[in-house]
Image (cartoon, rainbow, N blue to C red; front, side, top):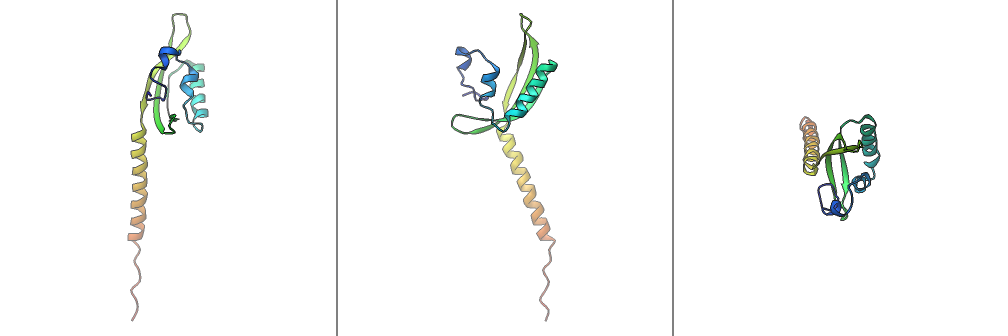
Amino acid sequence: MSVAGIPKNCCRTTQPSYAVFVAPIHPEDRPSVEQTIATAVAEKGQFQLEYRIVLPDATVKHLLSIGHPGMTEAGDLEYAGTVMDITERKRAEAEARQSERRYRELQQWGSFQPRSPTK
């Protein structure tokens, strides 16, 4: 399986296509990915987006895709780009947010001074 969730030998037997690209995209992310790509195509511009994919074994990966437009010899618009697995970065960011939240909670409790019992 490739980084993008597309079987490694897929492009030897199947022409790379938009349908092959969007198939593994997480259903919650698909509308924003499709909108970003549609805007890029309409403007013949580049795109950069982060989204999740769901692998056949139900593993979820976070990806960053960057696409640059170009023209084929026939004059058709095509995109070349890169896809990077940013799952570990996303996990680390989530852990940092959680750690920061715990730190703030501890600070709040640390400033709490219980009253001494009166005699």
